[in-house]
Image 1: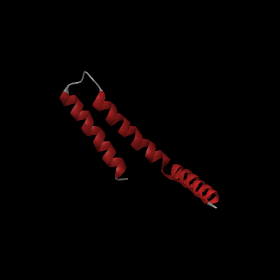
Image 2: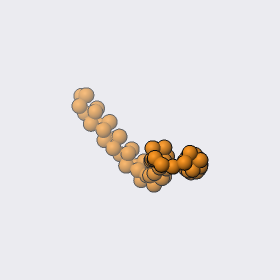
Image 3: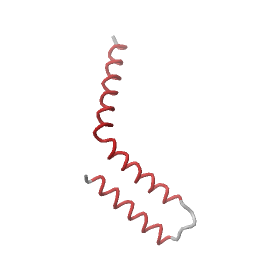
Image 4: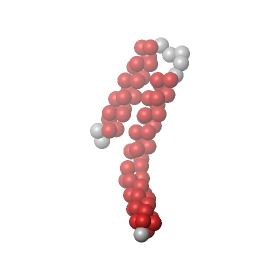
Length: 69
C-alpha cells in the first residue's frame, strides 16, 4: 500500500514540476541568472569597493524587478 502511495506522490510531483517548468521556467531562469551574478560579484577580486557596490545595487534592482513581475 505504501509503495503505491509513494509512486502516486512521485508521479504527481513530476507532473507539477513539468507544469511549473513550462509556465514559470523562463522567469525562474532569469531570477537564477541574476542571483548567480550577485554571488559572483561578491566573490570577485580586484575591484574597487565603489564599483562593487554600484554593480551590486544594479543587480539587486534587476532582481527586485523580476520578483515584482
